[in-house]
Image (cartoon, rainbow, N blue to C red):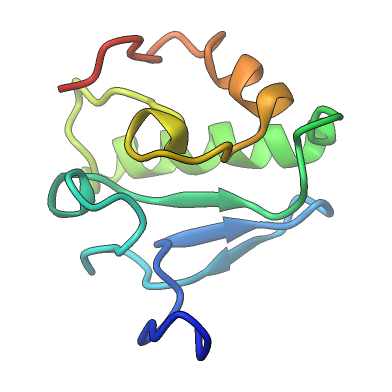
Amino acid sequence: MDNRGWDDIGYNFLIGGDGNVYEGRGWGIQGAHAPKYNSRSMGICLIGNFENSTPPSNQLDALKNLIQCAADGNKITSNYHVIGHRQASSTKCPGDYLYNEIKTFSRWDPHPN
């Protein structure tokens, strides 16, 4: 934050390897996670490095549950799409292994606009 001049955590929520969900900016606050998507998305960060390993199942379950909670609570549109950070900006995030997991989600969008 200090080195890059950021005001705060850019994600709406973060999920730890223990499966706990942590509030970043929370519901209804525009994130600062993916510039051309910030105003129309919810940013969720899975804490860890997933370039060489898959997140633990409890972390993935928490991600799916959080997305479902957002849909059920009308925090996101019913026709939402799921994308990986690398689809929004030039980055390796979320790591190859997590990205491959995200691509199996039923709402994954291979060509977001």
